Length: 133
Image (cartoon, rainbow, N blue to C red; front, top):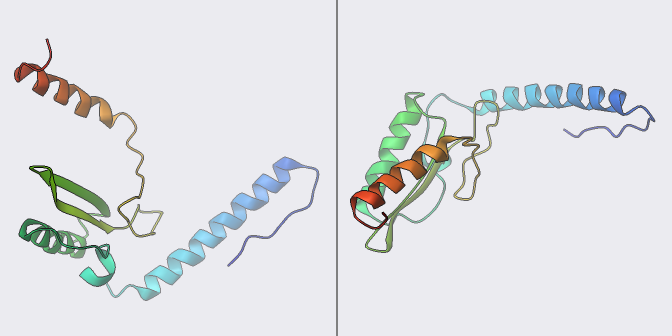
């Protein structure tokens, strides 16, 4: 599958043709994916291939496979440190409903305004610990 190259002076025509081609490519890609999918998630193709740092991470990976089999999760990245050491660094699933590429440790997700709540929570936590006034 490849996109055709259009030669025209009308940029709106090029944009409309390109969008139509992208929709066609996306449909073909989803058909190919559905033909490959047997309905069950296997850890070998659903969990990103990376070292397991702890027993907790091994349990998390089994849990993520179960969630994938139950269609309860599309994709996730989890990284946790304890005492300055990585204990969990796992990526699993796909980037989204319309983007079936696998999640990798460096995958980016649009989080929009969700960081405001995390930041507010951290500020309150630091204030409770007396780190800020």
